[in-house]
Image 1 (cartoon, rainbow, N blue to C red):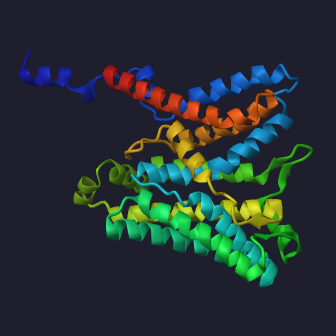
Image 2 (tube, helix red, strand yellow):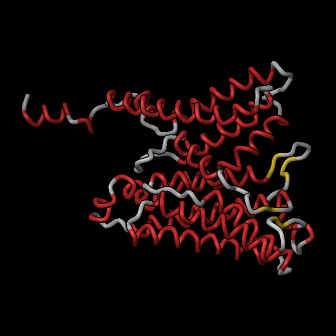
Image 3 (cartoon, rainbow, N blue to C red):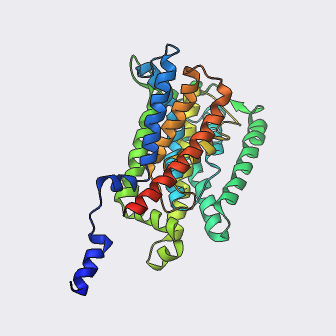
Length: 350
């Protein structure tokens, strides 16, 4: 056998890869397996207490819960694949909800005029986070943690100063509320009460998956998360990519703040605080590495579904609700172990 023939015979690019190996190399396969397992788990335990997990009414509840995690988990996953974190995503929900409430009820601005201003506020916060990280070289964990505390303080202090309370209610009295409510927070399927929030979740997941898998920007995300120096050397706009990801995260968090403020017809200073961990857990469960350069938007969305099913399923199964956080912690640990095992198995199978 000639040297050329031998080289071709051993070149891994020419080897056939089995279907199982291709499946195991997908970052979202662990999340899919976990979602099926959790769904079957609560199907069994909920049925023992007379709840039909397969019914539309039960599905409405866990999909609604999942959507409030999944909407923001998508850009958070993209940001993590790009090698960064945003711990201010949760508090942004409260900040933007309060801003919408203040503009529409105290400044008497039509809600449709207030919404672009709220989203613009999200753009500004994203730019501040991204540019600060790029210019100072500080870890995004520290920068966005600082943003988190700044916004948390402003939410309470400014709202109290401007309105005399730390909450804003009666958004349904604002001009343009009814039409805005239909687009952002109403039910979409009668007689069942599926919320339009679920449609937003599905749509944002589809867009995120398309961007990551089918666009040049998606390639840039993987590149800057895997090795930003190498990415810069081959012409990838590292700074632009990272800043754009921070902006996307803040804007989508602002969108969720709008959705929830309209749905509840009120908002408060503490809204959304702590939910940033749910977004990160969803992304990690979905296969995103904390070191960046690897992950899946669909996996993050499945991770959000797991969290939603867990939060609602524990109640339907008549378990002590105090175990909710125990369940979430266990799911996180199992997901990391499973994803690590899958990647290791896939590497050995090549």
